[in-house]
Length: 245
Picture 1 (cartoon, rainbow, N blue to C red):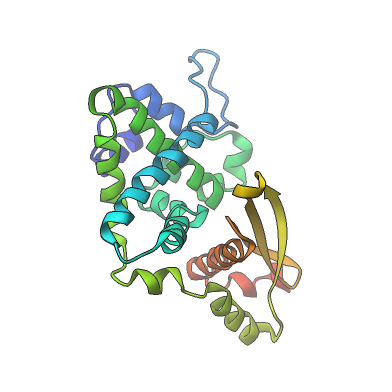
Picture 2 (spheres, rainbow, N blue to C red):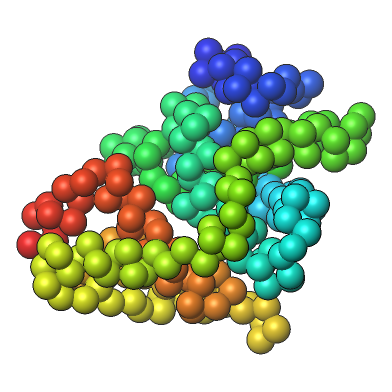
């Protein structure tokens, strides 16, 4: 097993009975194994399972930890935690970018730092732990891992956390820099009428600087603004670069 994968298992405090399922979770669809190696597949399918596992475990511990929140508040809180942005943060803490098996094209274009790719990989790793442990332990092990990762960073003021106005924060920042408003655009709408999912992008000077998905356009816009603010936090000159001139 690669050293980075051993370090990852230590960070997760979980040792795989089947290391190949971890390999699959860390393999991007762009990766082509050498002809001399067996192809164990990529993480596209199991990231789908990881999304469901995270929703289940996080829903349960939010209900237990924040009994004052109603269904709407719980949904907003969970959506923020399991958003693309929220999961990419967890992925960075685990240094998943260093663990990935990527194709040359993704490597060249900075795939190890892409928010969407890191979030997908985090979901896949959670699915891998569940699949590896379910026969012996049910959901006990994956619940322990997810709670260890998320619980220490939950705020005490849940209501304040889920009502934070990222759009206003971003707008204030953009206004100071350029004297113009940021704009939002619907990029995708999917799902049946009773379970719609919207993807919104935020633009500054016609350049996209953040994207988010949620059960409403309002929530998706907030997550897009949060995405942009995170990029600004990582690189304070992000909006001042030539891309936004």
